[in-house]
Length: 308
Ligand code: FUB
Image (cartoon, rainbow, N blue to C red):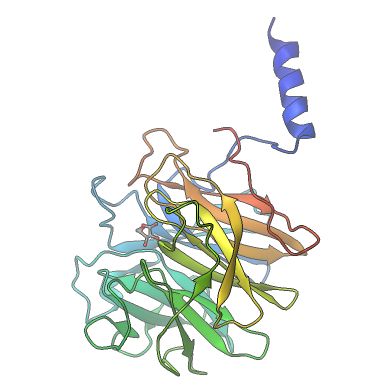
């Protein structure tokens, strides 16, 4: 029998810390996780890959998942569609979303059609959401320095209450948000990363900007491109410049990656997408998570992709 060998392998992998197999949080194809601790639950706002054409990321609605224990997840459905934004084309692509809580309200930041970012607001994490301002929050055609592709918004509310929104492809952008969370409160600036390893020309910013703070240090993580490693840089100030630190998650067999990092009950987690479900691929992604650890100098320890 192979059972003792299998048992030994499992015991070894547990002892080495690689642990269990990679587990998608849902059997539905989904991507671009935006996890948030709201109350006693973790909510994951996501791009829907199950309703796209299978040939492109052309879904027009976003999905929501939630969990109390990060093990059992509920599918909260297609909670929002691009048509919530009257200024958007009904066939506009719904890409990597973001959410934020402020003063008892929940804000949803939505890249719509690849050239605009909308903002919606609700009284509860799961909605119903309504357009917060009746116009795009960022519009490539309107806003100076919005860049070629204002997508992938992400928001950090700092300890002093100031909110920052990051976004963009190929050049990372950062802008202060107003106290209403639905206006820009300063110029859109390019976020600068210094110290990329000179021997690796592929190491540059691609997409999926993400800012988190730990112990007074700002961590800027992102995907290096298509395909992308998830790497990070740090700074003592939110606007940067950021110094390159290293790889969090290596290339996966998929054309995009998109990460997010949260702390819950003193533990840190990396959410990302991978090709885990049967029939999975570049446009059929699945969301998963892994524990994240830091070294004594604040370095993020690289994550091994668990066996699929
Ligand atoms: O899901 C569509 C796009 O693919 C996202 O906006 C990017 O971050 C990449 O994951």
